[in-house]
Length: 376
Image 1 (cartoon, rainbow, N blue to C red):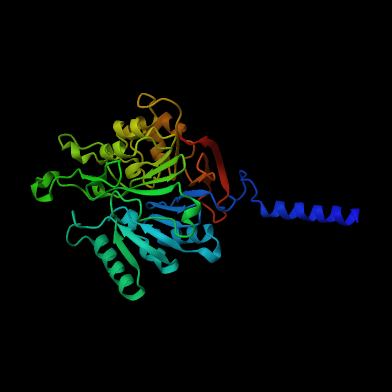
Image 2 (cartoon, rainbow, N blue to C red):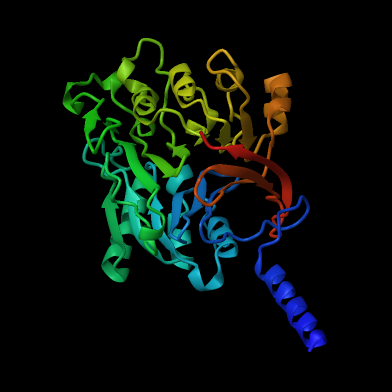
């Protein structure tokens, strides 16, 4: 009887060990997502932006799909359990190829529940824009033939992107639609203000760019806050009107943030002093893919303690050797200069870790582990 009991206890212990996810280790595979955890994967595509979000109840969201659509789909398929390979939402921040050029390839392999873009009621891309024309053709075909649900972002709302599988179990999860096409959330309730003047009143040389119309989203889980904003700018060209700093209005609305995606790949005009000093992010993720990402001035602003005190960790998806040479010593201050960057938020949202995965192999072994960080 005692022998049987000892055997049963040993078997139970082995079962529990097998059922419990193994801790991540450098050189090993990243343990899969588990219920209650929020995962944010900034995918290193080499050609544009793409991020996969897996919410605590298993709801999935893709933010942008650059030209490497097949590679993005492959990443999503490898990350999600085979039985649940589906995107409940896909959000395309704006109508540029490095943010939506691969959405057709993704949709060909993975079902998409609802596709959300910025809409074109304020600023319609220039007639003949090939990226926009192809996107509209894809959207029309998918809606007509396959019944894809597509809609514009409703700025200010927190009820457009919601948990699909067990919302009641995670009441602190919220996706706030912060900005799109010149409308910005006020920071209170669902109220919105328009920071762009009426289009017909703006001189041709000052009209907003497609980047200025980018969607901005804030994800919240308990104490944890995350922001992503496409290519929105923060530092207008010399002599340009102040309203072109979309980051300023966004920063005032969202306040301190634990993690944010560096706007516009760190290229020339984002990450203004107001934006950085307001968000005070502990972790900044640079979705770089070109030799011009980031610019020296932007990186200098990101690193300086003059804008906000304390440490901050910067992770880049791709940093070219030529970029490192131009940046100089600041290149050594990155926590990672290549790889898929995964933010894993612990159940409840009080803390999070950052994992860097090898982007050169389908095995995606862990190259680095950072944290845990305490949420603000």
